[in-house]
Amino acid sequence: MQTGTFRDKRQHIPVAREGIPYILIAGFVTLVLAVQGWTLLTLPALAATLLVGHFFRDPDRILSAEEPDVASPADGRVIAIDRMESAPLTDRPCLRISIFMSIFDVHVNRVPVSGVVQQVCYRKGAFVAANLPRASHENEQSWVRILSDRGPEVVMTQVAGLIARRIVCWPRAGERVERGERFGLIRFGSRMDVFVPVDSEILVSRGQHVYGGETVLCRLK
Image (cartoon, rainbow, N blue to C red; front, side, top):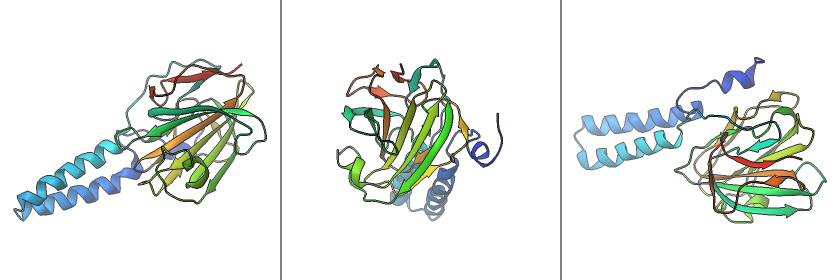
């Protein structure tokens, strides 16, 4: 396994590193309120601390996908499966699988296929609700294009949501990534779009709940 900034950042601990400051701040406020004896304020603060800790949890996952499989890059609910004239960063027709992550889902994102990152792009944008169709066009987002070991290119898009204000994406162009490994996260509610070739065999359905790194979304031809 290669070393460097990307691999250093994704080394596993039970919570996402980017969430530690939020957890510590919420815990400190709760402690101060408790010491002051303000019970009516302490209880909501404790609940908020637990919620923040739950949001940034980063569980291990059992990876069972095979070489042609595209694993889900995120936990959440499949809200759309549709054909597009072209994927971001490419001019090829594709299928788009959209996954909505609520604030109760794990928000650490995982690589869907093994391969080499060809391109990473970030775009500022709006923060409309991530489950709305126009979020894919208007919201802040980051695109990652991967040339898979199988041959076809797969593009994944991190889309910020109504509450989200920060997209974290660690890999850079030229780096090799492995299916199921952590590559970033989106803070506080968001969406992930995965673009695959039109001849891919879709293995999930709209409304299905999927798990990052575990659920197989489709199979490449």
